[in-house]
Image: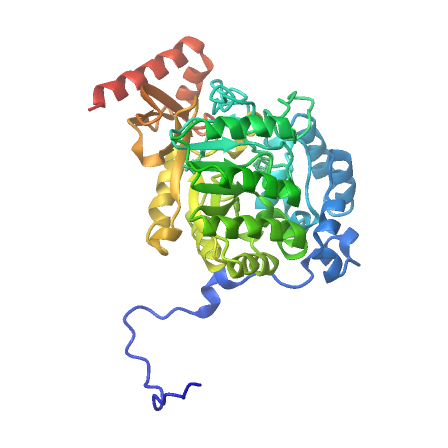
Length: 462
Ligand SMILES: *Cc1c(COP(=O)(O)O)cnc(C)c1O
Ligand code: SF4
């Protein structure tokens, strides 16, 4: 029983201390609702019930370039279709796009659409790869004691139990392994293989310093419920393991699964609950890149996770023309907070083959970070990081030893990972001055620029 406490009539609002804000300008709360998929001719008759069913989404996901182009017939110009056809012919990644994603693209202006840019390459936008780029730029394989287990940092490791995803992103860092072979890349096999998993668990068990396992891939969305359980139980049973993260892009590209795949969500929830009774943290790490990826369906899905006490953190990749403006990044961060997803990292784009058009400079990242910090809670403010090429691990973008905006070369060190080693990150070359671009084109001049940057960093080192 409780009694109503009377507080009398509401007093008038105290005088304004800040300029008034029109609620209509709070864009982060304005999520897309309703049958937005009806804009796509092929989905005009698809009901809410069908569209919200993950099985329908998975079954109708488009898995090769000809089918994708066929689905776009009539929506886009012939010139755009030809451009995309040629774009796919040279792409290092497999093709897979969910109907949900396809429905969120503005097909009246596909060239500039932030989701189109992430999933559908256009040959006309292609730029030459940076001359210092390698296929596995993060050296994940070099730090792997077991195939698909990267032990780089002292107390945490990255476990790749499978090599498939609900969608394939153009910019994937793991294009060396993820998805099926393409004309450009023959993949390292990291398929579901319980024997390989057992070896990974045995290695983890043998390393008392390991406390934290990232279960990634590929993508944990594509693990069956029984596999979520097997991996979760195996890791929770190890006394040294205190934290587990299931990494999945799923919430950003197919939130329907959280709402309709009860077996999968129940399996995950059981592992989270079991972890809680053991005082171990089990969370989801996801990957939203643009505010348009967060709809009313996402909100419903994230609410479901909230009700089950499942923490969700987000890792974004900074990409040119996708989210490389302060306004977009602020909206993304606020909208993530609104649906109870914690922005954790914003990554400078790795040096990945075939996607030079997506990279931004370090300077861009630093400028955006300055604008984002202070717009919302500190715990919802992402750290901007560079994953140092060559295996240095993630570094705070601001912590460079040296950065020359003219050459685009930055130098990092990573004393907790490899004491004494210097790591280089390179801004894209195309926006640099013509004279500097010419130096990049000449191998001796390029070597001299890099040597100069390393020497300048050493001179500053304390
Ligand atoms: C990113 C990453 C981790 C986790 O790092 P956090 O900074 O704790 O998110 C672990 N291992 C590898 C190899 C990674 O790339
Ligand atoms: S979902 Fe993740 S692992 Fe899969 S293709 Fe996209 S970035 Fe790569």
